[in-house]
Image 1 (cartoon, helix red, strand yellow):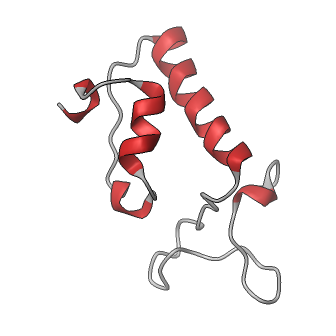
Image 2 (image 1 turned 60 degrees about the vertical axis):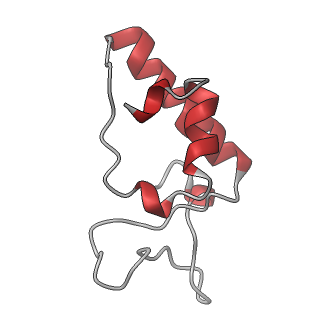
Length: 82
């Protein structure tokens, strides 16, 4: 969070906050930030290519706007749905 505070949503006081009040262990990402989306995509590709990771757990995919679109940038087609 310190390296990229612009990747997070902030309240009226400028403080980073959770996506839901009871999710106190996470911060809400600002998916409107194109740099954040690019960084996330780059990191997924990095882990897949450089370390052979062949899957990612997406417990909160419902919080990612246009999740289908996001995944298609990484893996074209419908293979990612398996």
